[in-house]
Amino acid sequence: MGNHKKYDVLIIGAGIGGLTAGALLARKGWKVLLLEKEKQVGGYVVSFRRGEYTFDATGAFIGGCEKGGEFDRILKEMDAREAIEFIPVRTIHNIYPGFEICLKTGGFASYADRLLHLFPEEEKGLKDYLSLVKKIGDEVNAYSRITPVRKILFPIFFRNLIRYHRTTHQSILDHLFEGREIKMALHTLPVTDPPSRLSFLFVATLISKALREGVFYPKGGMGKISEAMAHSILRSGGEILLRTEVDQILIKDGRAEGVLTKDGQIFQSPLIITNINPNHLVQMLPQESRNPVARKMERFEYSLSCFILYLTTDLNLRERGLPYFTYLRSLSDLEEEYQIMQRGEIPKNPTLIVSIPTLMDPSLAPEGQHIVKVLVVAPYHYQERWGAGDSKTYRRIKEEFSRKILQQLESKLIPGLRDHLLFSEAATPLTLERYTGNEQGAMYGLASTPGQIGNFRPPHQASIPGLFQVGHYTRPSHGIVGASLSGLFAARAILQKSKHQISSTK
Ligand SMILES: Cc1cc2nc3c(=O)[nH]c(=O)nc-3n(C[C@H](O)[C@H](O)[C@H](O)COP(=O)(O)OP(=O)(O)OC[C@H]3O[C@@H](n4cnc5c(N)ncnc54)[C@H](O)[C@@H]3O)c2cc1C
Image (cartoon, rainbow, N blue to C red):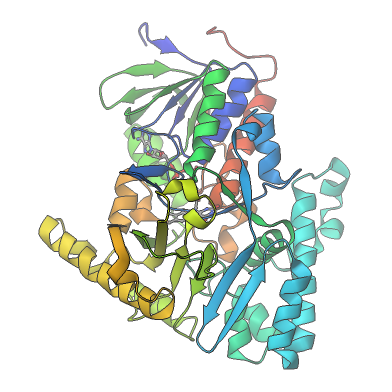
């Protein structure tokens, strides 16, 4: 290759995975270049402004931020922890057909008490369930700090991870419980899959983390997380090019050697980390290098996407005592919603996941006003792919759907909302796909089915030497912490491999 700019590592995509890997390698003195196609960093984890409002594009909270937690440690390692103020989310309100539960996050015992109070006849099953969840949570925590001795004695120290690695949430629920309501109450985390598809290990890890360690909201909005990571990269001398879409990965003698961007720039490096949809990665490779990478992805299934409604109102939602986060389920059959979506449809009364960020940080909107974000899991192929390219039809479908959700929200959670609506905008699976390149707007990358969690997910080192993958299509899992851990693991693997070999390019 000619005389092009050279780096120690090139990163394609500034999602949380790419930002984490970039920040950690830059802190070690590596010459990092991060290429991002959008005008801002963060992928799904961005905030956007409309007038005086700051909206979170997607997520609502994040775990692992408590002192010594997984995310706290990663942020400290990249010297970005001080830049973010995390506010604990105290309660999560779950509303089901016929009953409600207010969960105190960071309070495992109160969760157990509340469920026991509601379902005294299920006491034995509940105790077994919660004890199992706790053991699995402990094993997962121990796994993240695994020692060589424990690695050798894996079956002894991690017996539950081994025992339940192929188990769905459904089989545990059916084994331990009789009633439909308690099964519903135990399957309420913001996930897109029904219990028959979801990995029990995954559910147990999430419940254990959320309830024991708590979940948090970053002051200033979710985008603050990505901004802090980007500043860390820049402070360490790394570079970030926004509005720069990578078109091709250049391979020489079977090794990664650089990238070509859509606007014709070439950057060189013996190491490339991709933080993008693996199907797009395959398309970026020369024809002869595609097969091994494509074959590895064939067996994986993607998560569902969603519809998001961004609203503002001058109703005093604080005075009404609403919590920051509400999960509002109308259907009592846990499988039904998923089956309907598989047909490309949306149920009449879908589950609504409602967050009100201004209750956590009033500065996100003018005084006396609130932001309400409503998330509804939705299929990519709704109404034949949301109007099949016809913008008028797309707008009509979006508006109809928004109206339906608003009506449901008003009747079940916020009476009088429509008369006090100041602003409304919506995002569909197509919006998510367009902004981030995620496969059909997949919320979580790969679905968290039993064969697709932890080490069953694609590894960080791709089959092409010099090519690494991070983000929610890789190990260990989806979510902000999952994607960040993928960046940490990839950075560690790279550092380990290239000990003392840093830069002939500096
Ligand atoms: C609606 C919704 C709600 C969620 N809620 C939560 C939550 O509350 N808590 C939580 O922990 N997680 C949540 N998640 C999941 C979490 O946000 C994701 O799992 C995680 O952020 C994925 O990060 P990633 O590293 O895989 O990158 P992504 O976010 O997928 O970003 C990939 C980046 O690569 C860029 N890119 C793609 N192609 C190219 C190219 N050719 N050249 C240059 N750049 C390119 C994209 O523009 C994008 O910036 C939610 C997700 C969604 C969609």
